[in-house]
Every structure is written in structure tokens, then in C-alpha cells.
Length: 73
Image (cartoon, rainbow, N blue to C red):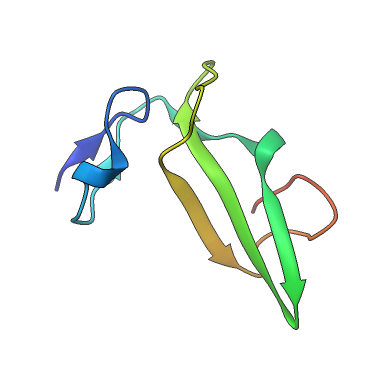
């Protein structure tokens, strides 16, 4: 299984499932949800304690956040 580091790996080169390296985290401050019968959720995967100019990896889910606050669970 490939291991990716969000700070250095490009998403367009990741066409197979893999895992993130230790120190990768979900940036809860940028989580977002859209509600249309169900709630569709996204949150960027970032290196711990680092802000990226652009995020290439996102965790997505269904009914795992609110559509009114920056949260993802």
C-alpha cells in the first residue's frame, strides 16, 4: 500500500488507494458540508501543524458533519 505525505505528494499521481503518513491530519477548520436530504462532507488532509497553499487530498463522507459548522466526524 502506498503511503502519501500531503505536503510533498501530488494527487494527480495517486491513482490507486493508499494511506497517509504519520503526522497527516484533517484540518477541521476548513471542513464543509452541503445538505440536500443527506449531508455531503469534505475536509482537507494536511500535514500536522502546517498550512498548505493548496490542498490536493480531501476526506469525503456522507452524514459525518453538520452543514452549519466546520466539523467532520
